[in-house]
Image (cartoon, rainbow, N blue to C red):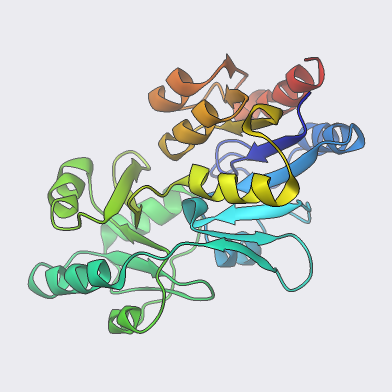
Length: 263
């Protein structure tokens, strides 16, 4: 029996440019919770994005895995931290040195703050594509004084491969049509946070399900007892899944939950 479901947000609970959470998705989440299933978020987003953009529209979850698993907290007042895994400070120093010699837009994410070095056309295009406003510009040198859990260089995959060669203690995932990259600690990813969360709640991997659509969801879909890819998912997500549901804009999330409740 499934005891927990982990949900990606973008392309799963809602479309990237979709306004609001659909009623059929809300009702499906209620059916799952009424069946005694714990509900969790597993996203690459920062909580500042989730809250300021109201991406979840008042929906409550038991816990939140953010920044691709590197910062996780309970869904109770005060957001008690379950797990945090910052990028090694040495890797941040290398990245800042690279940016001094060869500038490109780069977003640094702390636990409670985030900032870009500068904005260009690619940043505008990518942020518009994911339906989120442009983060604030700040002095990125402060990244050496604070824990950084995720960095987003606005690069394509070829550029990301070159950058990764200089950052051996980081892993990366390319997203948004190959114009953005998530940099996290090596061995990180959503699964690193999921392991800590299910341990906290006494849930085994085979007792959980995961639903997602992106490249950064592939590992959690493979890890879960039941991994479900949205019909609009990337090739990596579809290949990692045990089951494929409908597209996000065609009620695929509700179909996925009904499938899990029937197991």
